[in-house]
Image 1: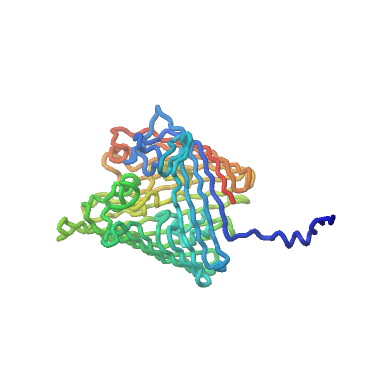
Image 2: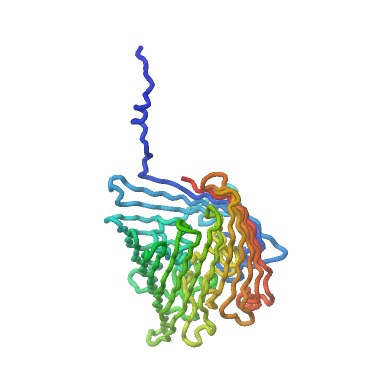
Length: 504
């Protein structure tokens, strides 16, 4: 009987590939949190996905007697396919989202549900189905349902921290949309041109909502980058489309949920809205020194024509407002966990609604979807929206327009790596005033204190404890903004414990 010899090391080296097959890549984000706090929706129908401003149309309110406690869970799987047949010239990306609250419902159909006993919920939500074509060196074409971010970098090749801390910081646009995006990424400059379809409805009618964008960024000196941008939204949807029955557009109920300005228009209107802006950034990733700076200024303008039923005459309203932001950070220690950063935001407001036939506040993507403006990297939790959420994206100022009144906000955060890359903590403070006081109320929106403790037992795995308390200001003496009650609401607070794991 012949004997079978064990393979030599040289043979094993040839038999086992040194590099795994990377034609298909799969990774996922698992997120689970326990939340407690004193704000919640008072409408039982809104048990699932709740978005928008405190005390708004979403019926969120605060209480001294009641405390909300619940567990939330999220899974974001990503699949990336690069066929070898095309030699890396095409990449297909898909991502999905499965969100639910423990114990909500089972044996049903619908997103943001499925954590009830027996589960078996049909709840997978499509986030992206996107194709990236690479026809020439440095050029790319992104096609399909994809990330629509107001940042000069490629949304699929730029770290999330840079997407939220540089450029426009998702201040105006930070969501997913269907469209086409053509990019050029050189050594010292980046440019993109994009077209996005927000709403189609009847293809034979002129009732669409579309966005066109252009953005350019260049390194003008060592560590300095300067960018320019221009955007245009053509709105012929007359308030139709958008999430569920809320609609989208200038006159839709969506504005009362998101905390944006709701134009008092009839159902028939035409809107042409533009944005032009500039970005300045210094030392974006802290690689060449302890200081980093990012700032932007953006002016939105346009006109809205309200049509009569006979389409024979119209009333014209003009738009002219601006938003600005500065983020200044100092790294005082060895790691990016040893950092102090200051965030300042200012947006213009409108004091007389449309009495002068002009809206002088800010418009963001939250007028057409929710949530679209993802200004979440400031460090606040309740005063401005925070990104650690699954089903409940709620804050005092969820949109930079602040109901059209405008806002001046300041956030200061101090981070400390007690054990580098292992155990980190931060404390933060935030304050904001409304640039226009509502009827019956004052200017102060509120002051917040917050903290975070984070432990990293393994790479890309975090256990976090967060907490925040917001002292409401005299802005909420007005029944127009505090949910219709005659007294100022109870101050909101929250504490939540998080487990997060990014799987490769």
